[in-house]
Image 1 (spheres, rainbow, N blue to C red):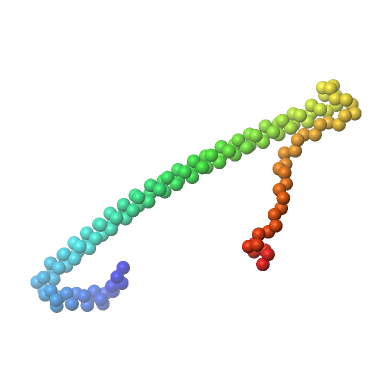
Image 2 (cartoon, rainbow, N blue to C red):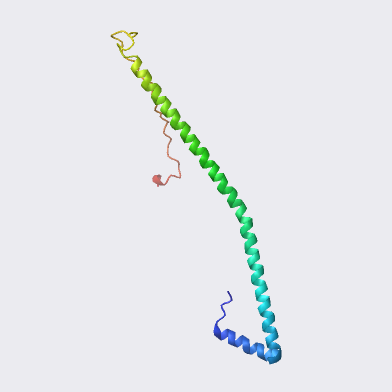
Length: 135
């Protein structure tokens, strides 16, 4: 953190020995050790509080994403069921109009065509001016 090497530590020890003297140096070292320990405890407590505060929005976001996934899966199952129902309906109507099955069709009449399930084509738009392919 402070980039203090062994040479700097020895220099600090010599300066502290000169300034404080040999009688007060052990007390000063004890006080400095207590101060550093207290700072570490405070920073650990602060980190834990920040983690707890940030965990709440993360949990809410995770639950919202899970709910959205459930909705998407439900929508997919509805679409799949609708597609299966439409396919069955088309298959059921195509065999009913053939000549000779129920006797209601005339022999020369063409069988009815099933409705188309393709989406209508959308008009193509001109490329936008910021399109990289135009450069």
